[in-house]
Length: 399
Image (cartoon, rainbow, N blue to C red):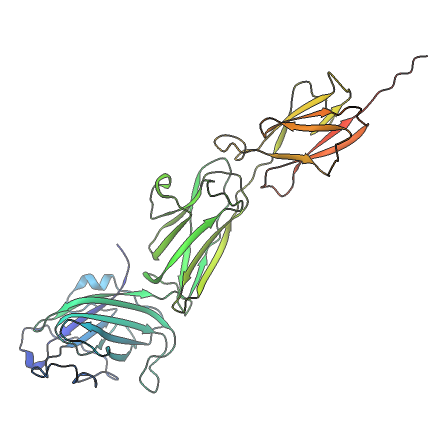
């Protein structure tokens, strides 16, 4: 069930309109109109000067006996005042909204709304955390706003649900857990959307919030995505999703690809066209690059290839690099390999590769005795896998 912020709107027939209406809820006193607003007479049809219908808005209480409204209502914490406006009506053209400003003390509570004409009417409700000022206008921050269009009939009680949408003012995302490479995993993205009083909004958001993920390698096809409301990951995982209510379920999917930390962000644009955002990181648990020496490759130390001849056995050596979640299936990525310094191996050996995971070093013509190093990188680890290449000669003196 979608959790919304609901106001029960009970429209009460004026005394001149006949009987048959439900008994009115008792509204709070103070700051409430007992007649049409000052701008109403010029808007009323001349043949029906008393044709407006009075309204009562219930904040956090069910209108009449409509029990279903009670279970779905939400009250922003810290609300102290509200503006209730009729913004459009099919019965007449409005020069300006018909509005009342009301106190909201000790809610759940009921307050009088504006006097409205029967017909198809549009209402807007804005809730604030400050009291009414000396001019009777709500002060402080706007916490929520909602609007609805409904048919208002004379001679009966009209119950109308107005969904209040919390107005985002801030965001936070809980820290994400790491995950092992080389396997698929999912975890929730715990998003909190805050109002101006730093309270978490439970219900609909007045401004939609975009949650997005970008991996640190700039590669969109790494099996990293977002899933909204339990859609099958293979069908709908995306780089971003749009959340409109606190009941949205957002999951981060990870396909096990070895990658740099990924940024998971959330953002919305407020009424002043300012973007508010926050972010956190998803950091996979990487596995080491490992080296395997090829057949007939001489070595006396780990990750070392020892050459000792200019041709034939001892003139070449080979090695293969592997990294779970990077070079194995289904990822199939390749490594880069190069001398640690420019021309560092130029006098000893040359380096070649046929696949990006298998490499061969070959003694150059007239190699000089000594050693050099080759760095193998994957673009993910901060440090390379270092392979040492040596060339030695043996001189046998015959006496």
